[in-house]
Image (tube, rainbow, N blue to C red; front, side, top):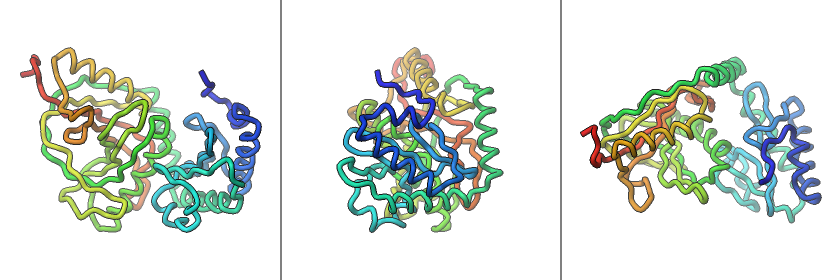
Length: 311
């Protein structure tokens, strides 16, 4: 099995073929020169660069390309002409290994992201980090329960991602959804959530990064409008770091199976039903933006009772 618990960026780069190492090292040098004050770390098992306001950029090497993250909607709009020769996929910019490294362009990317991050409140960022550490120490999960929910309209950015891409691609999209709502003068009707429409652990997951609203508005260029269906949900409340949600999901499934609870699905898809994680406790980072570190989450699934003692 390939090594994934890297202690440094040097160690990460060294796992690639010699010709790829040279390219990744050049990308690394470009980012460090463009953002000299950034801290270089390993985050989500790939190299990352952080300022006091939050993460600036990640990069990663692959067999045929190397990637930069995150390509937010604002980022893509600002560089839409420059990005034409490259493949954009789910918040990621892919650069072919067979082509020369676009030094000036990557430098501009890094500086643009650094300016975005600098606008955030450093005090808020420190609170997020402190909250993160506290939640890891004080994780708590409540027993599952069944809840009847009304239909809930929402706005979202929809993406297809592989499991390994979720942590880098999806969190920045929450800010983009809130920015769109602010621009339209629409107030959120609750906490943001992720709705899982298709779950394919070996392939792609289709996920809505969403915010509930009181009344469904017209959709936008990058915004979809949909509705969480009304019905009976199995729900489980987890207070703690998001890393614990996979375990929480497994516990919820086991609990449902022990009570004969089945799920309303269509050929393995949740599209006509609902599988969601609601991020109920976040730190607001000003101007309708949400911090990426999440405190309290619900793992919910719309279910139908089959031979359940809950009937």
